[in-house]
Length: 166
Image 1 (cartoon, helix red, strand yellow):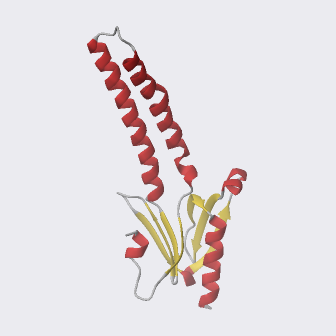
Image 2 (tube, one colour; image 1 turned 60 degrees about the horizontal axis):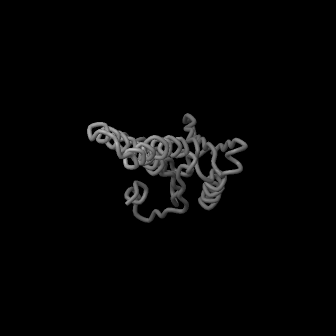
Image 3 (cartoon, rainbow, N blue to C red; image 1 turned 180 degrees about the vertical axis):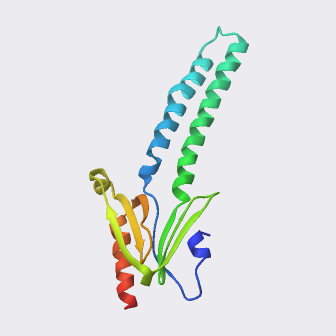
């Protein structure tokens, strides 16, 4: 069960949910594939295809290749955890944003306290569908959230829900 679903008050429903865009995993995927594909798999293939290698050297190459593959998988999993540890939702009463897995930061702002939601997108962000959302509450400080998937849709849904309250 997600953080948002487990912290709904009676009568509150989730209207819209989004998360970080897959682009946040790009660096993890590149590094993971470099560890998996180039040195790890090549080292294991080389160790398996050579016949005249000492068994001690063979075990070192196999262990090194396996260690690189494990490191590559761990790096990719770290990116997946980072992406899935962030939840952003609009409910019938508030905006809820939770980041982090072990250390957690949450922002829960009642819809009638939302002053504005600012969206900024780079050129690449516009093409791929991600951007930065800055939620500004009445009398509060701006809270930026980077690389959010579908930021314009999130802002539009929040604005629609605020209009329904009035």
